Image (cartoon, rainbow, N blue to C red; front, side, top):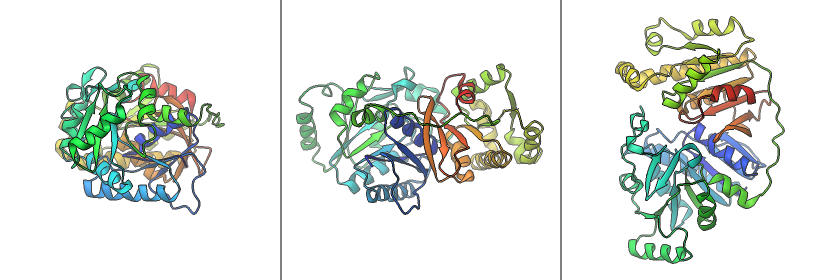
Length: 411
């Protein structure tokens, strides 16, 4: 095993796994720490945790347990994968997790590299931008669970981490980089610290890997996975999984602008869709049974069931109680996915990180082969336990407007 990866949620795990596969490394993904007797026969093992929204104490505990398991399986390098928009409040988990793992692995420093230029996330002068807009001015500022309150990565980490962070925008591509790191270490007079390199263009990744690719610990989004994989293997192999002819159930819980546009495009194309109203679910006027009746009226046809709505309407709905609304929607979505698989739907396509996590947990598959990507960071996933099934889990902000149509054509 070359790389052992821990990811903060399920869609983040499938995101980074897809880039390792694209670069040519065999990759398996597990939902939680697997209970298996023999090591995974893969060059990359990705463990999907739920640390993005856990309380910090549990997030650190789960992360260290996953790192310990990966060490036991012989991982040579480690990668902490968090969201490419660094969506974390001052009480967030990225700092505590990275601090704990850096101490556990006894490494003096690592990098913070959340950028993913192919999806519009870049770091310039230590600040994170989304489609050219500073993080805290972007639509991400309205995220219902982890609102983005700043774009400066030093400010974000200073609020969370006990170790200092240093920007390295001008020095990165100079030969004196090792001397610069030594100077930073002496200046900070601490045993651990973070380096924040700029990453504005896709071609920057190759230079970043040349400088930092050999570190025992790397942290960031999925932007470095592809060049890291290429560094160890030049030619990717075909995944060998064919497309399914089964009808598909598409489920959308994300309220991001990207997902809402994808729903609109799907409906405009003539795709069948059904709105799952959160307030009606809470009042009892709507139920999983009623929605399933609509789906099962024509089991030969794919259908999209969505609860996605505008930020304004989401805030109004959350007056009923944020946790209650989220819990009802996640349970209903997971119930529908389970019923669909039992009824012979072999394609399940899910939009939204929390929604994907709920569906993955309910279906209970412990591991996945990683197939081709529908869009950057969103692969087709085939459960190890049932190779008839094709799963797609995407972060709400990923994919072009025709994402659902692309997913249907490639699963």
